[in-house]
Amino acid sequence: MAPERKRTARDYEQALKRQELATGRALVQALPADGSPGPRELAAAKRVLTQALFELRRLGRDLDEQIEGLRSRQPGRARSAQGGRPAQGAQPRPARGAGPGELDRFEAARNAVEEVAERWEGRRDQLGAELDRRQPHRRQGQGPRQGGQARGVRNRGAAAPARPERPRSPRSRRSPG
Image (cartoon, rainbow, N blue to C red):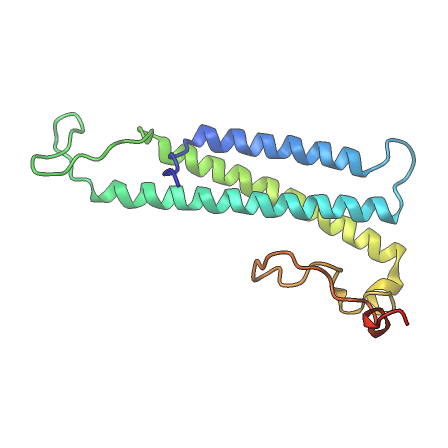
């Protein structure tokens, strides 16, 4: 596996913009152009936002790691009083795009990611509330999927590979005859 190249703050800003555009396109596809969306369309839009938030949080974690790396390098570098050059005996480190103010740019990108995440979480919560309002019986455990677990979403937290779904009833395991 090739070593991953360090991303600049601009790379993260562009990734955020690409993600916003992709999410907007996915929402346009999920919601009807005319009229009021039905429960299916609302549920699809909520799924789009949930997936977008997952990807956005991953971007935020990557940014956090980058920021921590920059912070850990800053105080440890001994500098001389001459133009910011490393002091004699100090090991020079490659800058990797981290010039003056780069940490501030990374933190600004992280703040932008947080703002977008908060906005999307609010929209997703609104969609969930509207779905609950339109389909109150599903939230009371009377729907076909009790426990709130959707089909095929087992072991999500453990990041297990996708597996074939178990049969819905014991009858489907019997041989036909």
